[in-house]
Amino acid sequence: MYGDRRHRTIIPAVAMLGACAVLCPTAALSADYAAGGGVINAPNGNATAVGSGANTTGFVATAYGAGSTANGADAAAIGAGSSANGTAATALGVQSTANGGSATAIGVSSVATGGNATATGNNSAAQGDDATATGQSSRAVGTFATATGQSSVANGTLATATGMLSNATGINATATGARSSANGIGATATGVASRAIGDFATATGQFSLANGLTATATGEFSSATGAAATATGQQSIANGATASAYGQNSNATGEATTAIGQASTASATGATAVGANSQATAAGAVAVGFNAAATGANAIAIGNGAVANGSIAVGAGALASNGGAAFGDGAVATGANSAAFGSNAVATFANSTAIGAGATTTAANQISVGTSTSTYRMSGITSAASLAAQSGPTQVVTTDAAGHLASANFTPQDISSLQTNVSTLQGNVATLQTQMRQAFEGTAIAIAMGGAALPSDKRFAISTNWGTFRGQNAMSLGAQMRLNQYVVLNGGVAAGFAQGGVGGRAGVTVAW
Image (tube, rainbow, N blue to C red; front, side, top):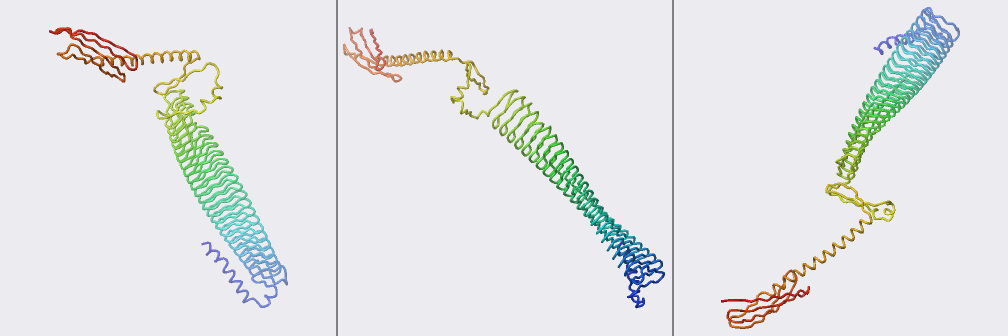
């Protein structure tokens, strides 16, 4: 439509100029020429005025069309009601107006005002030196302002608007893309329906929005609102002074907030979320890691899946709440003011502390170190400095089967008494051991004195024997004498080898 309408206006005018050049007297090429009611106000200037009310003033000025006006050397006004005012000014089109040296207006009702100003398109307007408006109803206002596209607007020195319905308002503002808008000194909007509002604000991407001094939004549907706010990534949101959101669907809401990573969220003053799906939702909270979450003022959660509620959790899957602190993968500190240090350490009671991998507290105010398989080493406990640091009565450490530690009083007098008791016990044990060996030797003596026999046809016999028992040995000497066929006397003596034991026996045997 625009092109057809423009051509319908310009082409007949050009055709009429061509016809004039062919049909007008030869003298018109070197002298003034007026026809159809045209008026030449500067004779002998080779001016041309053709049409009812056409009017020229200036050397080689040309006015063609009813009511057209050309004022200035080499000025040209072509079209009914057109007006060219200024040296080499050109107005081409019905009701077109060019005001200024070398100004150019082309199109129905187009207006170019200012040196070298150019307006091209029906109802276009360029106002200011070197201003350029191109496109139906385009507007360029300001030195070197440029508007390109239907209904585009560039308002301000060096302002540039490119695209249908684009709008650049402010010194050096730039809007590129259909319905894009840049409003502020140095503001830049690039992309369909992008908007940059505020000095040096920058919006890049379709439907992006940067609103605030130096605010920056990059990515489709990104939004940065607030001084120095930055949103980078599709549908990213930075809302608040110096807020920063980086990543698709990231959201930083509040002054000085930072969200980095896909779907990350920082939603309170000074909050920081780093990692996909990370969440920092309270003032000063910090969440770093995939799915990390920090809730509560100044909470810190660092590690994939770490969760801190007004507390500190560092490590993959670490969990801390109620002012607790958990350090280590899977560490848990949920008791009030509790602390867990080490992989899978657990402190769930108030003021309790778990230290070491797998350590677990079982009561409030408890410190648990390690597990049942742990060993403990404290290198400095034997140092002279450690001993010198002690003062007053010393105590001993006690423990139970569960590993609960306590202390008991232990004085030098207790040590002396214990040493005496130990010495006495050692003596008793030594005596008992000697008595046991003597008893074993006595058993060997008894064994050695057994086994003697008197043959039936003999009156007297002597025998010797050896006996042993539990490492003790003995020798015996025995004798038997037959008094008559009915009575036999016997006796013997034995001695041990090691303990000096001596035993004897005597007996009588009566047989009938």
